[in-house]
Length: 141
Image: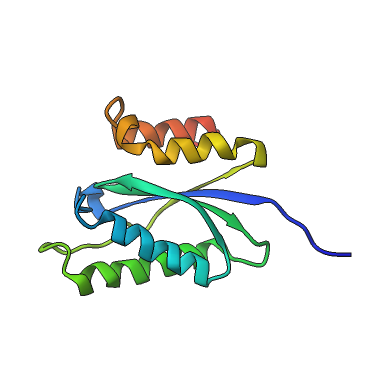
């Protein structure tokens, strides 16, 4: 008998103070770096994208993985990467908190499309409106 699981988590976190510091010229490099962190931790990155002030990551997780440890490692390592590369002249830091939302396998196509279309999506709503929408949808007070 083998263990089987389908655990899909969308993680959303922002630049500290929701400052728009993620530059279009280097966001792809940041996403590749974060992809490497997640892959090296034995998890499967399904989608990553964002805006200058926040990012969305959809992960296929193994049950033994601790989400908070993974997010902490992603933030810590990517923060150091941004500083090392000197992408911004200001202090770059991720906010402490994050949102994590689970999905069924049947919802993956829509969630991936949603993440891939962040730039278009945010022409209609702000980051704050988006996050409040997630909290309402998932019935978080």
